Image (cartoon, rainbow, N blue to C red; front, side, top):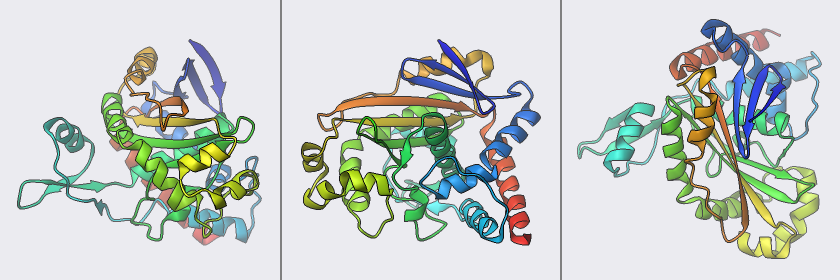
Length: 309
């Protein structure tokens, strides 16, 4: 197992698996304050709306307005009702533990998605950018037209310009890592179709402001390829990466090896016949509910702070 220090994290790595343990993990109060402060640092909040790295925060009205807009993305949202679906017993037991829900008059579950999903995607974005050095094609929150909605499709879109690889990422936030792995595997069952849809709805959409360097490399091919399969055949993309991010509330620092072992249960199948790499990331937060509460309260405080600037 390799161990590396990064931005207050101790990063444990074994093959394609990573566990990010933030400092003061044995002291819950210090841990929560430290991790939440880190994710809502001004440089990180600005990075979420920009497509470049290495941003420096320079206090000005323009910068504070950007920060205010970005922090609002996590706030003032009602839980969104998802489509009523028929669930098998195993999925129902996991879903009932992870989400608030109600049942309709036929006894079927109507799921509700909470705010923490967006915060999980945001932390995922930071790790892919800051630690791994991948470039964001477009922050998915730009695609939403309603703060009470989640962005459709794949959770994160990134690319590696040096290796000509595109990343289609999936993020989960669960009370237990095992639950997160289970939910990820359910999502991966339809991932080929999701990637095809992502190509049509996002990568081929002229209305979205995609990363300029990504467009410089691939725009000509995108314009003449009707499908993602055609695009892969015509471009120099020879492999794709599926980064999986699971923030979870169980475990402790001594359980890092168990975290990495549990990530082995993610179903790593080849996608669309392409060489497919999986990048598996665990982020323990000690207690999911406490983290959600502290993060939302911190976001509210920062929103008031930026509004007053």
